Every structure is written in C-alpha cells, then in structure tokens.
Length: 120
Image 1 (cartoon, helix red, strand yellow):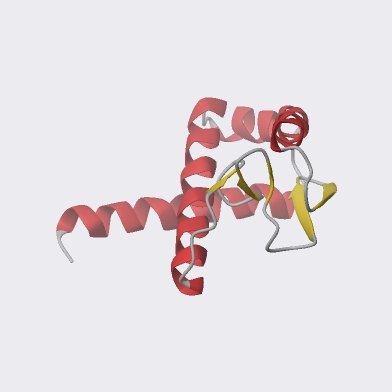
Image 2: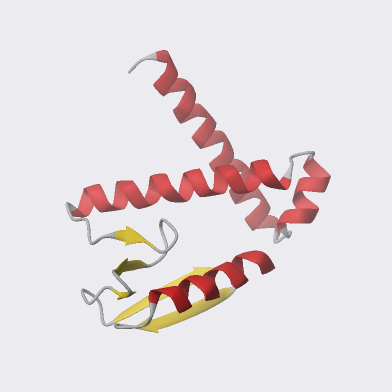
C-alpha cells in the first residue's frame, strides 16, 4: 500500500467517525456543520464517498453486479425498474424508510430518495 492509499483510508475513516458522531447525537446536518465548522457541501461529499465505498465493497463481497445503484449503496435497479433479484427493496434515509416492490419504476424511486435526502 502506498502513501496515497494510506492517506485516502485515513480520510475515509476520519469522515466515517464524523458522520457517526453526528448520527449518534441525533443532530441534523445543517446544525452539525454550523457547530463544527464543516461546510454542508464537504459533509455531503464525504457521505457520498463513504456510501459508494460501502456499496462497492458489498458488491465485491457478493461477487455480483446487478447494475448500478439508484444512489450508490441504497437501491439496486436494472433499466427502469427495481431489480427482480429481490421481491422488496428497503431504503432507509435518515429516519425514513421506503419499501419498494419488485418492478417499481426507478425514476419514481429516485425522486422519492432525492426528496428524502433534501429533508435530512
């Protein structure tokens, strides 16, 4: 492992800890960022990077790739519908939970996720 990879792992671990700290306190992202001095943009950037890394690691562990994620790490879909490899897909964003049946339109599901993200 070279120094770049070590530094990248350190930053990922650092931000994972920051995000867990916010969640543990139950603080919303805006207030947390104001209190700690981080910008919301930076927070969301690292949150997305961590979700993507978890998703990729999960897919490698399973040895499968059923397409792409509606938003990496949340819901798998193929084409215009939720993947048929599962009868239901559960998506949790903040305190909200969405359960999508197989065949749910991915465009509609993506819109729901975007609305929930804007509320977090």
